[in-house]
Image: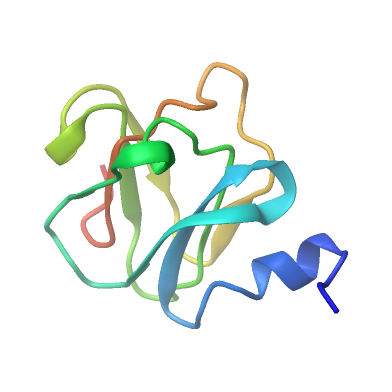
Length: 104
C-alpha cells in the first residue's frame, strides 16, 4: 500500500541526505544526495526544472539549489535540519542542480 500522508513521502529522504521533490508535499522524489558534497549535481530529463518541495536532513551542512546546471544562476538555500513542502511560486519548477555542503 502506498503511503498517503506527506510525512510518509518525507520519509523517503534518508538520514543526513538532502532531497528534492517534483510536487508539493514531498511527492515524486526527483533527487537525493548524501550531505557533505561541494560539487553541484545537475538534474536531467523530466526531473530538471520541476522542484516544488525539498528537505535537508543534515544536522551539519547547509545545501544550495540553483536554477541552472552546474551551480549557475539564481540560488536557493537549504538550511540544515529544515524542509519546505511548498516553495514560493517564484521558486517553483526552476531548480536544475544542487550541492549538499557550503550553502549558497
